[in-house]
Length: 261
Image 1 (cartoon, helix red, strand yellow):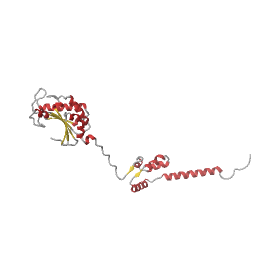
Image 2 (cartoon, rainbow, N blue to C red):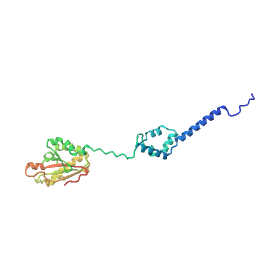
Image 3 (cartoon, rainbow, N blue to C red):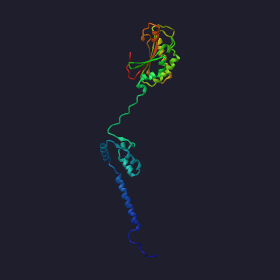
Image 4 (tube, rainbow, N blue to C red):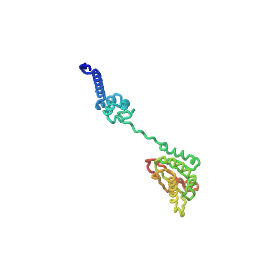
């Protein structure tokens, strides 16, 4: 066995190892230094940028946070206020709050008279109905010969078709819907109807029951009125004039519209 002694000092590989450890330590210290951020200084910087350009885009900042999964990214995320971090990529901070979106006005609300007239175009062309606007209310008027058999309150087939066409518009409105029955001045007294008041009210009720059963109109919007012969359109001095006065009217009242006598 040789009696040679090992060379004095540290082994050669130890020098290389020590250099490597020193470099790694320096690297970690630099990374930690770069990762530290003062939130107050960040807010000051953000305010300066906002004043200079008017807006501040978070896109680049959010990209750094999402792509850097290391210690630098975590520290950066922790240093930024939560309200800023929660912003999505592409969000913009401005000095003014965004204006709320204005709701679009449905076509029916925009021009109720035109919508009703279009829905009742066929009946109007055949003189089965009339449409007019009065005091902000749209009135659809059906003569008795179209709506009901003489002296009865049952709906005719022609009237059912007209109501179906009109209901498509009524379902899209929000105002009150009043059904008013009218008669001429000739008195009536039967087992079913004591007077013209009973007959006019019963006819209005028949229309309401049809709308309740076959449409989605809110019942709170519906009301009936029976006027008998108290509100004639023309003088009851001829058979043709009496026929004009025997009618049922569907009055569509626009939202927030005051009641009319």
